[in-house]
Length: 68
View 1 (spheres, rainbow, N blue to C red):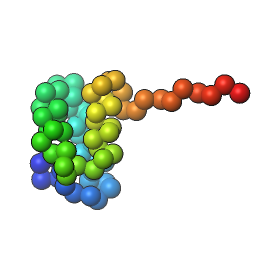
View 2 (view 1 turned 180 degrees about the vertical axis):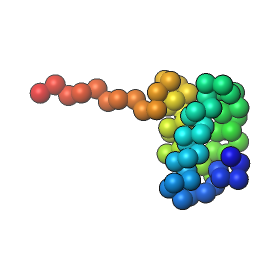
View 3 (view 1 turned 135 degrees about the horizontal axis):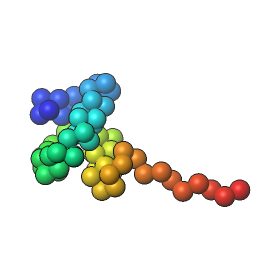
View 4 (view 1 turned 45 degrees about the vertical axis):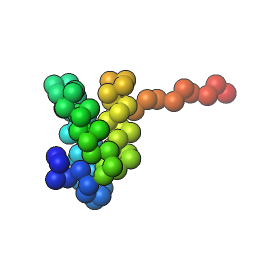
């Protein structure tokens, strides 16, 4: 994963995000360390998605629906 951390091709950084999110269930500390170590080169979307998964257990937090 280290070799791909600074790749800005959309397909690659989406795969990095998916791989990190998938690894949380078995290697949470390693994922947290990877985010910390590579935060300067990872795309903001990768950091946001992985951090959300670490914090909530979900890929994305749903916004509350507006009542009409």
